[in-house]
Length: 242
Length: 324
Image (cartoon, rainbow over all chains, first blue to last red; front, side, top):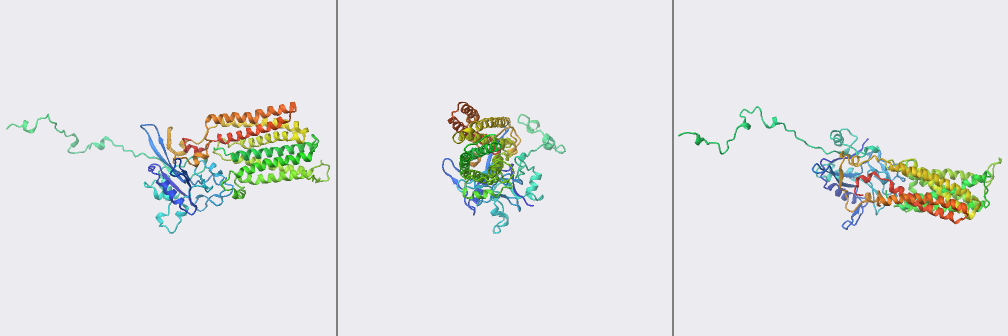
């Protein structure tokens, strides 16, 4: 069984919002119709997005850390939003585990958005249907694209490669290895939704330099202990008698 | 959660309609065993069914305002295996149909005996009434479970949710039945009035129980589990949108804590205290107009109660929107 998902490396994300804009660009131009905006250049801009980057500050100064946190549908293995849908518009694909909304069946009752603890679904205020991340399902299988480009738009756009894409059920895939070896974790595990998307934690790179590494004990010239004469010391000329 | 008035009216109006039907059938049940007698049975039961239908259709109409695509509403009947909302979509029209049949049987006076056994008359309408009662409770269950089944909305995820929908709907329906009896079957005012008082008091006990439960509730999700960073002090600096989004509008009532608190006391007084006093006053003084007033006050209280029910639920997604 395949379960496509994203793995987002919080250690690398710089919060540039390139994934947000590339997601919006790709998905607003697709056959499913635009993701509508209201007052995009006005005082209170608002609109439909599949992906958003939030920023949190952890700790208090001076021991603070800024965490940029990209947030989109986690394509849960047990998605609570799917069984509550009264029309069957929300569904989870058997073949690749992507959670999708059929925009032609959705009645816009918003019940699925209530049933998602992550707030990953947003209603399109103009088309009146529920929208969410599709993992760029119209892109990742497109045979017309070069194979390297058959990835979600956000993954391709990320300048720091903070977003990995692959099959989390395949133990040898890049994403599975990353989750396993870099400490990938799911969000809100307490609800048993088993999110497929995982996050890689912040990792500190620390150097431990021992004194032995600075001072070479076995240095035959003992260069570090060689005394450099200062200006008050007598010069060779002063010491020698002609 | 953001209380939507379409859902507030849907749940309160069909609750009254269901409660009124239960009131009618209770009267029929008692009169079948000769415990009470209804003089103008035809007018009372058919008129009562009509009033119940008006409330049920009012609720059904309100529900359409909640939908983005009401023209596709028929699709909502397809997922009854998994979705309580879909089940409600099936059970509500079924209940409306049964109430219509029940009222029509009385209006046309067509109520043959089904068996030749020595049973009281009115067997067909009694059978329809039994079916209506079963479907009525199924509808209460569906409506309550729509909210009760979402496990991470911890304020709702309790058996008290469907129970309170049932009790509040039944209590308001019986209050209306008392008011309706004043004009069609004055001999039933006491019967309905006393039951309405009892049901209102029982509903008050369970609603206050739910309030106390939610007062002490401990939320399982925290900002730490939401973003997976283990630190006591996390401050949100950006929400990912400048001018708000669906996430900042749909999941929060947008009022102050003081407003929420005042709504709580308002609904407790309007739904329980004043209607009980008015019902007792009406029955002791014989001023029947107070019965209508009792229902009007109780219905206003129910709107406030439903508003509070939604506003009180704290959705875990709000953890990602700390400045709400």
